Image (cartoon, rainbow, N blue to C red):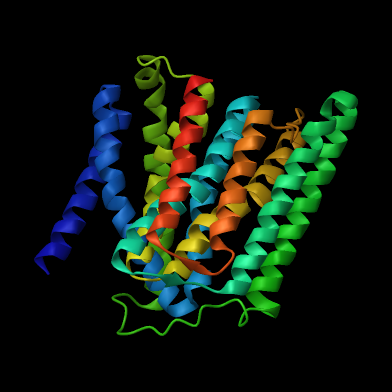
Length: 348
């Protein structure tokens, strides 16, 4: 009980401190330090809420809600970047979010989960469908990039809108397929033991509150990065693809690690892989349409090194997850690829 009260006190204390630090314009270094600690507490809160929702709704729905709420905060931040015409940073951050989820988040989760549980299992059919969807995302992003130089700006805009529309429809149909028509075939059928701490309604409410807190902390933390990263001479590409992607989404990603430690790898996969799919098939296309209605259309043409990074991440993730089982060494493989890409983006 004492531990529970200490956690609540820490959560409230550092969240309030981060509010004061941001709005009273304390030094960026101090803001960064306070927000980092606050995110640790928010991460624990979000992880507990996700676990509780998953108890009532199943691992897939719990992970889906976590990924969706987490990406909602990122979509809001990206909206303001798109509004300002900062398309390059938007694409870099989307790239970083995709490869960060597939390689860093899933890698750490599989690694620590594998240390505690010799082998973890999730639905093989789900793994197969996830692989197919990831390949769809790669194909849809590669085609506009390959033919971009052969088309006029107007044709590129049209192609981007068409591809974005196809991806959004595909993602909606995937949700209908996986959550309704083939829900039972794609569930993990994990038997829950014991009763959760919160009721169903309270669990969903806390998940929403935790996500709102994540959104604020992420925005405040990211706002301090310009001065800090300039001291080390980091490029916008590295900041967008790695720093913002890691720091800005740290809280919801920690929930994936917590689920892996509890041997709920199905929820972990839904948070990590499901979040990447949601970004590639829904968030990025939605931003294209948002920019179109704002009068300055962002095309869906990514830089070649961004596409290669996404393709490599999809390839290694598909390779280790297609059998529906994971172990700690597969986590090492994912993190190794992430480290290589991190060095590359830093040098670029």
